[in-house]
Amino acid sequence: MEKRNISQFDQKPSRQNKLRVLIDLDGVVRDFIGSLIRVYNQKYPDHAVSPITSRRLEDFFPIGEEIYKFMESGFIDEIMQEAQAYPGALESLNRWKNEFEIVIVTAQPDDIRGSTYIWIGKNNLPSSEIHISYFKSEIQGYALLDDFIDNLEEFSSTGRLAVCLDQPWNKNWKGPRVKTVDEFFLYLQKHLYHRQKEQLDQTNLT
Ligand SMILES: [Mg+2]
Image 1 (tube, rainbow, N blue to C red):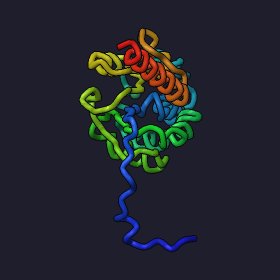
Image 2: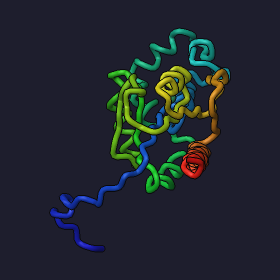
Image 3: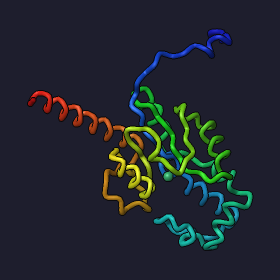
Image 4: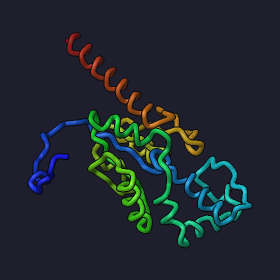
């Protein structure tokens, strides 16, 4: 193996103007719900959790509203840090990182922030820009991939491309929808191709 020397850390890579795309974490890359159910079942092995079809978690866990207390009381770090990535999600980000600037944008309450940074590190996400913010539409980026309709609507209202990662809780979103992270990048590629073609056709007309 080539020996590392400290000056290598200072070497600037050449500037690349890749298109910035904003990627949400929970419900898109990190399976927070799957992790919550797994940790819940460890504590309550005989409780049956119904399939989660909305963001109202209290409707699906037998302990009802108490689920929010459960998430706070010593379990939240494990739920967030030990969550699995959705199948293929990390592989896809790694596959597309050379073509697009992957910017992570995730809304996190203060007490979950640390666990989210740990998760990002543990899973070696190919992103050098992480935003923990509830105001995603204020962040510069060509497109957003998210599972929460409010975020999609807000982003789309700024005239940018908002794509929904299909989940049982976002069936009411009328805009573009994909089943996987990889499908999002393919969709984006096609979208950019058509945009470029339109622009070319227009210049040929004038
Ligand atoms: Mg989300």
